[in-house]
Image (tube, rainbow, N blue to C red):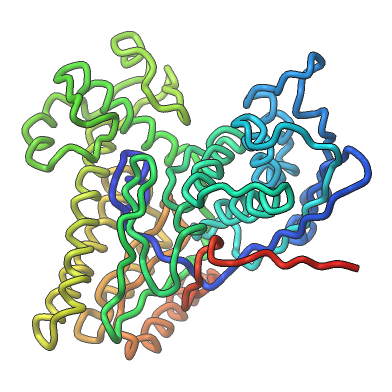
Length: 426
């Protein structure tokens, strides 16, 4: 729960899945920095991708700009390597690494499907950063590693994601949803599911991307709305985060937000937004009110969902069931808002969610919703463990109806920070 509201400072809830990225690190005798990927090979992408240490610096020996580093991975066949090697750039930029005497080789293997909306990019970034930190003797706090990984995605790969995926991948706990306040990243708690209740992920087979235009426009419009409200009302108490606004406060002022506004009209009146990951495009039109409304209401839904699950864990019988039903309704509300407020739904997701909801809460399926950046990807399902065979049958029906081949994510894992590296010597 929470999803794209993370970039507006929302509370979010995210669970790990039972998939992983493995990165092997080996020092070299030369100055080459090389990235290999088994998955890139199978997708006909360029592998290995080779750079030199000097490629990170200009002729005067100064560290290059983020834009210059992004250019190193601008070839679509090599963009995947930016997730792995972009972390080195920020480790140098932020003073963690001052000098490299030798190059190194990274080899990555993953069983997380790319484009499924289950944090494959965050897992690559975190795994690579951990490998580099270990081999260079760095001890960086887990949340700081997550923030570095987000910078890789925002400024090297160019995807304007929030912080929730990186935090969950690195700091998550098995069978618990990590509760995160994304201002910028604070872990509040780990949410235990009620006994007998589970969550799974069903990959629709429709790829999604946080670099896609719809996601980028939704985020841009939210920050445009923040600029408009800040200019009209001040709102210093928001501290730059829309989700610090209460529902009551938003309802009282939402009429001051335009439904649709062109980029050039906005720029001429308000100038650039405070967002460092997106830019207002003059010739685009933005649904500002809806894109502000979604994260504020989503933040409220997350807090209610958290209370429902906590209450269900303590309750029995009818009361437990009612709390879980309400939690499921909040999931359906989130899914509705993704589609109808910010335009990040998809026909595949709609079909799967509708099939799951049709079976109804009487059979133990409480809720389902799109995850992450939306626009396809994976549907999260809340259900009684006894209803798992039914959930899987519904998913089989979906795949037959849509002629799509998806994937099922059952179970969860500890986050990457819970694992120690393995040293292999010859």
